[in-house]
Length: 174
Image (cartoon, rainbow, N blue to C red; front, top):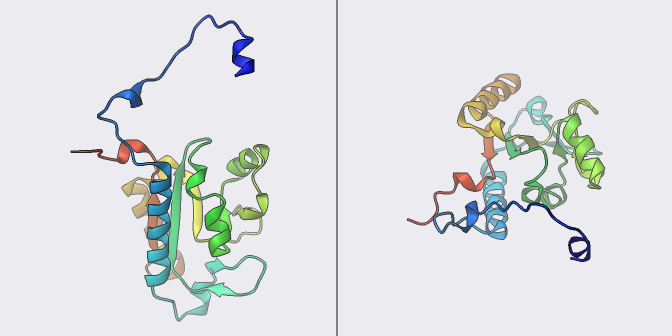
């Protein structure tokens, strides 16, 4: 507040999109809880793979132990924003790193995120169940493409669950 009081403003622009009553988005807490419920559902119900080489897709960080779940969760993000949906609770709760691009890793490092919770495919070549991707990578076409690519790579169907955390996907009250 002090910084604002000491400055003279020539112009102030307010985005009042959300002041319109037709935009009634769920709370951030409700959204995060819903995502956690969906992930728990998939983690408990996706059958384990009997094939050890396929299970290597989900290597537990820092161990030789392999996860046998064939599921990948993709979280759409903008350049910055939407991280509360997955950071830091999912990485800690499931003991799985969050896979990000090198550019996203640098951005997260610059804002002070705990980098122990992240991995990149370039750094060690290891993959994980949680992937942080561009928002467009969570479209139905892209999720279908990812499903086909992973299923071909691992020799059996891989479940792909995408989260596109934007209020514009929420239909609001009827």
